[in-house]
Figure 1 (cartoon, one colour):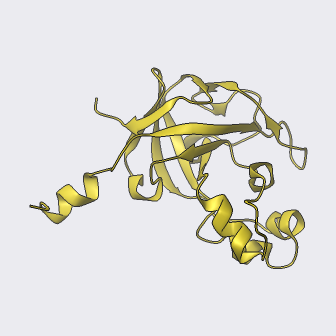
Figure 2 (cartoon, rainbow, N blue to C red):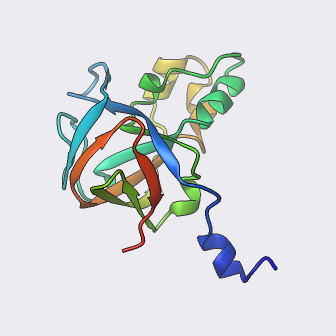
Length: 160
């Protein structure tokens, strides 16, 4: 039995994991890949990002191949070019909008909404870059509980 629509919407197939972490130290500066990061209420330490509902930006690692395909490339695009904070694999971030997720043993984020591409995507990917990222730019999140994250940390629906 499949369950009610509400049950189906709340169900996830499996936990995900953190596959990539990036910090943007200042506007228009290169994104720095890191293995670990501290997350405060304002976002990732060392990142210039905002606060509140857009404190952290996340994207699906699986979408890197889709973006590349829309650009006519065979290899997935480099996540640095998206200028997001956390690349997640194995769990559908879009399905988690409005819900909280736990990253590792400490951090809890609420997925607040889509992270739309900006005009910089044309600079990063060339002609058609903005269109290629539409629908694949990731999600924004607010920090509910700070802590440390690392590459490989599990990403699960918050159950607390």
